[in-house]
Image (cartoon, rainbow, N blue to C red; front, side, top):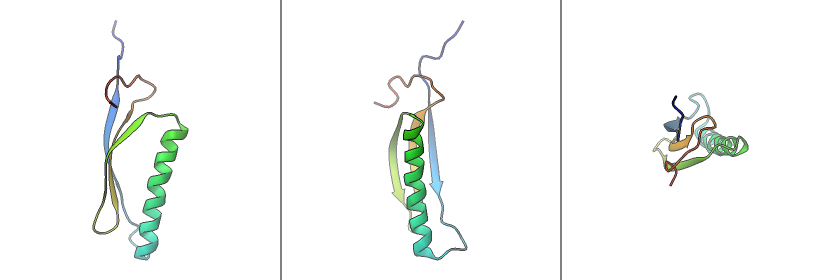
Length: 79
């Protein structure tokens, strides 16, 4: 029999601007979407670590995150 000792997922997320929106408004929407994403992780009690958060020249944002997979223990992944 096998058991999961530790599990995490590594993701690179690109929060993109809405194409048909005014630029400044679209940038603010991206910032709000990123904050909402973080709040959702916290609300769901998902353990996570953002390893990189980069604003692109067009105002969009790329986030690299390591997060808990389902409810599995995270082991040393988030250290």
